[in-house]
Amino acid sequence: MRLIQFLTTAGSRAVALVISNEQVQLLQGVSTVYQLAQQALSTNTPIQALVSQLAGGEMADYAAIRSQGRLLAPFDHPDPAHLLVTGTGLTHLGSADTRANMHAQTSGKTQAELTDTMKMFKLGVEGGKPDAGQTGVQPEWFYKGDGSIVVPPGTALPSPVFALDGGEEPEIVGVYINDAEGQPWRIGFALGNEFSDHKTERLNYLYLAHSKLRPCSFGPELLLGELPAHIEGVSRIYRNGELLWQKAFVSGEDNMSHSVANLEHHHFKYPLFCRPGDGHLHYFGTATLSFGDGIETQLGDVFEIEAVAFGAPLQNSLGQEQQPLRSVKTL
Image (cartoon, rainbow, N blue to C red; front, side, top):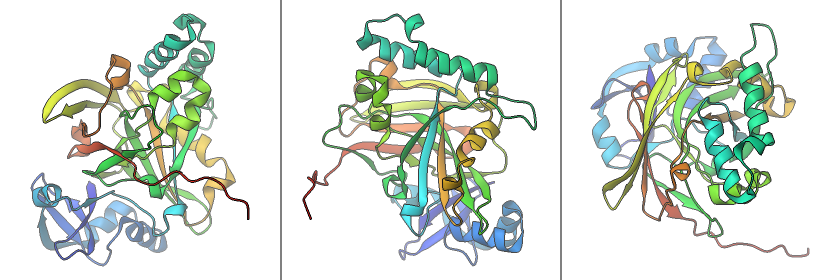
């Protein structure tokens, strides 16, 4: 079961159940997934059961919604400051080599000597999937921003003027909401483009935090229920309408060094992230990226991330941020 958020032809917001690539069925009584989740919590109803109850007879043209640019991110918060965007790295079995090689290009060290990167990955392989009731090893973790950095599917990812690079990171995103008591609830999963500045990170791995403070996108569809254990996808870049690069990737716990439950535990163990009413988008890490293959992106390039389990592909172009840089003034 997959959901989208979109704008109707009249400009109002709506939530719909994806029926096919051509049709979606509108939900009655809610105009956002946030409202849907709050109703599920207040009535103690599983969200998939609630969707089935609210799915009305009105259908909409999904192909037209996509082509007319009316898609929204599949989850948002009425106050963007209360939607926290975070992520974890070195979580996939194929992710460490790319990171280690990237850092080796500037450090002059061999991959074997990059102990911080490889040690973190090794810890995950050995302890990232604990037995039930046990606590696993902590993953690499980073803060990315709040809801203001999320751009809708089909729109441009605005890279800052000071950025050295803007590259895609195809990932799975966990979508969460906290109830009135601060208990986190997972709503579902979506495809995501975590989008980072890999040249800045390559200067020194301690610049990772800076490299992550960039926009991101996810969707267009929100998958309800459990995450498939094995996910196959393809990441592509188009330039001037032609395919520039593509590479298959895999995700899901069969291909990860950490379990989803372990990644969730080490995020929500902090009371800060259990604030009542807050939403969370958590990126679970990438298995491949074009930067590792020597691709340098350009303004106007189009990123496309696709995996059958998540329905329609996520597409975003590379843009330029227009907001001027500000200097601090004395009050």
